[in-house]
Amino acid sequence: MNNTAEKTFDVVDFTMAYENDELSEAQVIAGFQELINSGLAWKLQGTYGRQADRLIEQGLCTRPSP
Image (cartoon, rainbow, N blue to C red; front, side):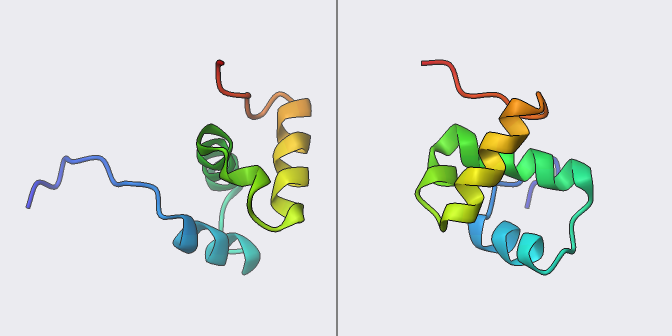
């Protein structure tokens, strides 16, 4: 097993940890950036899309390039 391989983003792990308030601010921002990049932020429960929009408005996350 290659320990230097980049870990893939696990949506279920992220959403569970997020909803259980187990993540640092940096982890929340990074996780939401992953959700935004994949488009899942607006396909999950509505609170995720609203939070993604807030993070974008605050300049903490960015919309993916078209």
